[in-house]
Image (cartoon, rainbow, N blue to C red; front, side, top):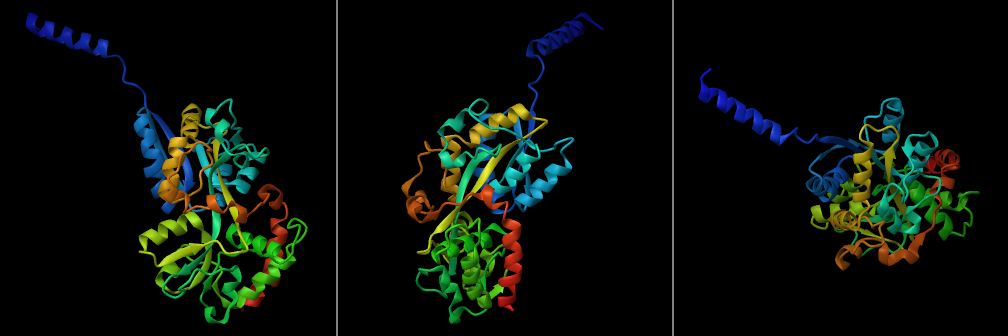
Length: 348
C-alpha cells in the first residue's frame, strides 16, 4: 500500500469515528381499528408524530373490533407485540382486570391533566382518546327530512329498509338504553324492558341485524333507508358519498361511546409508547383528528374549528344520556339473552 493510499484510508477511518454510531430507530406498534379509522388516524396523528419524532417508526396494526384486539392481547400476554392499543372503554376494563395494561395518569403522561373528567375512568388503566356518539342514519334521497325520532324506524314505509348492528354490538345496545329511558325506564342496570319493547316494535322493519361490512354502505346505496351508527363514520361517509347518507340526533337523545388509549404492560417499546400516548392526547393531535374524522375531543384545551364541532355532539350535550359502561358490562350478557328472546323473534 503506497503512502497516499494509507493516508486516504486513515482519513476515512477518522471520519467514521467522528460521525459515531447512527441513532437507533425505535419501532412502535399501535393496535387500533381497521378501515376508515386506520386511514384517517394515520394521516391526522401517526404521520405528524413520526415527523416530530424521526427516531420512532410507528406501525399500525389494524383489527376490526375491540373484542378482536383483546383476544390478540391475551394470546400475546407472555410476549407482547403491540405497545399501544386504542379500544372501547368496556373492553379496556376487561384488559385492565386481566393485567394487560399499565395505568396511565399525570405521572407518566403529562397531557392527562387536561382531559375532560369523563375521559378518566378510575377502574380503567387507559384514558379516553376519542368521544363518539350514536346517530340515526338516513338515505337523503329516500328520506327527505331528518327524522325527529328513533321510532321513525318502526313506521310502515320502512318495512325491510332498516339496518341495525344488533346486540351485543354497542350500537344496538345503545339504542335499547336510549329508548328505555325515553319510555320511562329509570335504572338500566336493573332492567331495560321498556327499551327492548320499543326495539321489538322496530324489529319487523329490520332488513339485517348484521350489516356488512358496516351499516353505512347499504344506506349509501339505497338498499336501506334508515339505520343506527356512529357519528364520526357517518360524517366521513356523508362527505365521501356526496351527501347520500346523513345523520341526526333524534329527540330522545344519544349516548357517548368512549375509545380509550392504553399502554400494553411489558411492551417492547414502553418508553416510545408513553411518548406517543402523550402526543395522541395533546391539543394538537386532538384537534387534527376531530377535524379529520369528527370524533369529539377528550382534551379540554383542543381548539377545534366551529365547523368541525358542529358535526360532533359537543353542542348537543343536553341530549347525551349518561351511561356507566363499566357497570353496564356486568349485565350486558343478561341484556343480550333478553334481546335474543324478545327482539329477534319479532323480526321474523
